[in-house]
Length: 340
Image (cartoon, rainbow, N blue to C red; front, side, top):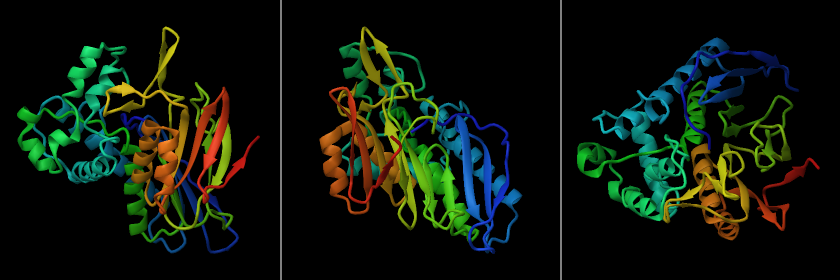
């Protein structure tokens, strides 16, 4: 989960690579989006549009998502809604709201995109406040929750003054962005792809004719550069999958010797404090993986194990602290190749 912020003019690299099959032609398109870089790798075999057209379309999709769902773009639909302005939701906003409500219901309120004021209060949202009083937490908690808003986004907008919604899609937006880009690639006839926008969606084979491999970052405090310190390598199973890691090692602060991490339990209003350091979830799509990785980071190690094991469509890797040392738990289908 990384925040959505303004999208800059894309700097694009187009690189061709031949796989073991001569007719395959892989293209890598990169650019700047959502506070970092993105990379889209596709096999152009059977695709009739030029790589430059794919690049322009992906850039346009990411701009549309930024203008709709970003809490850091002050002119986005989300920012204007949070400021109390009447807005007309676009298809992206309606879609992610409906899916977020389903996730909220399914997780019993653990993943709640209507808990934005809590993240602001603790300094992990769109403001810089921190270390609130118990009274402030209790008051803010009363203004949060998708249970207040309901499943119908049109109803929420029509009753804006009474409901005073304030949303933060950071827990699901990057995964959702991957899924939207992947849908576009499927519409072109792409079968082999990897979409990396901070989170990952992949399908098919890589240029070597194997399933895609993904590095899992070591959850060391301050490990801010993706891929700089890898805990291990995971090779994705066949078929479409989202692969998302959530952790408490990049966004946190320390006050009076105590660490306050950005994962906040929307049921209590407080940052979590447990041994789970990171959760990597493999799901049929990237938004689901994004949401469930957040779920695991809220509920902790033991509940996460039970959750992953109860869902045959999921695989997962949990890295946790045990007496100052990293320990790893993986579901049966999640094989992590050690880098040690």
